[in-house]
Structure formats: structure tokens, C-alpha cells
Image (cartoon, rainbow, N blue to C red):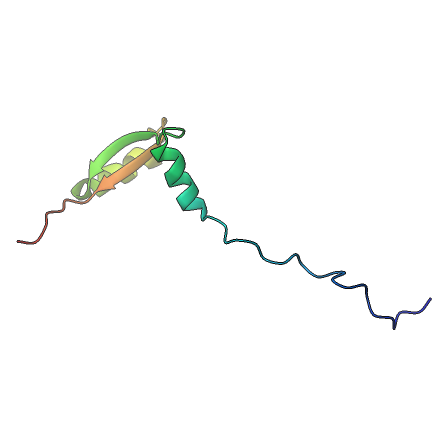
Length: 77
């Protein structure tokens, strides 16, 4: 069997790239905006309650979803 023959055109090459794919984050945002997905938050803590939030998660009390820390923010005057 000869192995020095050229391969048929394109054999073994990956497919040509198509249009750029949407990022997974963009896809999730689209689904949330459309109401198809709804984020589930177990509890929201202020940033200064980080220790309490960590204890809440480590003790297994966060059952329904994610715990979120919120940083206080105000625009610059």
C-alpha cells in the first residue's frame, strides 16, 4: 500500500470557520431577557456581611440558589 500519495482535497482538515459563535454569556443573557431562564438567588448580603455570607454557604444553609454579595455604589458627584 502506498502512503506517499497526496490526500484527497480537504481530507483530514477541520471544517472552514463559519460565522462567529455567540458567547455562552451572551446566550444566557438573551434567555434571561426573554424570560426563558430566571436566576435563583437564595439570599443577598451587603458587602460588609461577607463573613456572614461565607458562613451561610459553608454551613449548607444556601439551598435554593446562589448567594450574592452586593457592593454599595453611588455615582461620583
